Image (tube, rainbow over all chains, first blue to last red; front, side, top):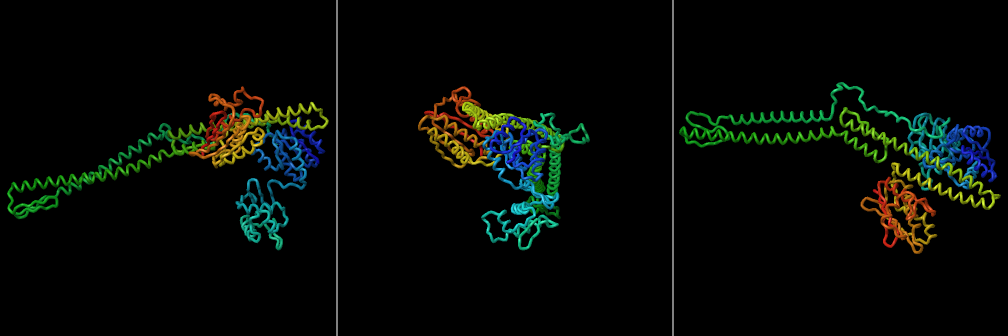
Length: 217
Length: 416
């Protein structure tokens, strides 16, 4: 597994690198955000262990860049700001995990390994397709620049459609992803919800019905 | 995009976005103060009421005189009849001049009395009616003049509750109330600045204090796990890790103390019974190891507050009760209840006798029972001072009472 450690405290960075190498990982170490961006551009890392408070380029911007590039790289944020609001902020930026300092090294190793097991490209935190922008963190939907108010179920259905990135989603799949187990499986609710969703999204229509299969955006 | 590693030091305060001075003053030497307005209002009202009353009485008097002006008699060819309803007299068909005069006198007197009575009654009615109108009008006007006061009070109350960023920003005439509101806004501005500076300090301090501790910890952990390290080095490493962990706990405790003293608490409903339950669960293993029995009698008691901080107090109290207990057969009792608008958390235990004069000292930071500052057992001596400051931040209080035979009863009361 290839890991990039980005941390401006050199002692800490080197200690983490040593420890991870002992766990049979290939580790690169950089001490600032600009060098991190450089390395990410050149190499393919499975996991980036990222401190937030970095010189030259801030850790948050490095994280955003990784998300933007759409690489399968996972980001584990490591930082002394460990309050709930900081953790939430980091995760909303697109980090895959967040570990406040001081931490137990065995936990760091376990988390890095767990992240390394996930190999598909992660979805960006804010989904965009066909002029629609969906932000699950803030529960907001924008069409071009206009904000659209959606009920929770309509939001959930739209999110499933956007996450499929153009693939066809059947009504059963929508029912499975957006409703919980207490729903009658023979219900009409999916069709009704898609209808109201279409109405709210307006013209031109973005949700296409594929006859016999389902819906797609 | 470079971002400074530490936030900029506080410079000049930001200019307020709302300018309290009115843009144009027509007559700068005449301020429409409330005093002048009230004077005009009440003087004007008195004047109008007086005019109204006088006019009514004039009309009534005219009417009364009108009635009283009717001739009491009609002269016919030789006979006399009473002509109005006010007085009736029976005269013999050939009245003598004395009889006539007496009757006339009588009649006129009666008419006078009647007219005056009438006047009195009607003017009394007019007075009552006018006073009702006057009072109603006065009440309405006073309410309008004083409505800015209500706004000031409401905003101040909201600020006390949660939001330091609110300002009153009163518009309206440049009078005493506006001065009061503007002074209030200035005071709120200073308060907000002080709070933000304090919060920023705590945030920075936490970052700066935690980083070297994290470095120590990772260095020790990584190099300790090296199988080639000799035994003495491993032992030294373990000791250093333990010391480092104490420092970590101390830093966390201090930061919690600082934050809980300054934070305007973000309040949500928290059930003390659940909080106490969790604290008991966490302390159970330690209690079992020491042979201390924990008993819990929890009635639901919901308060608005910060769940994390409240759990912290409960855990501190229960842990203290377990640690400062007798060697054998000791117990700890935890109870929650709702009494007279307050939620009460009680933790009592068996333990060493605490003299009454030591009770206050218990709450001082770094104080332990009878030993100067921290000893070497677990904990950093901050638990009770954190508990007191969290209780205060919630608007409540914490009391300690010695128990007969040893031990303490700790009581936390929080307003609902």
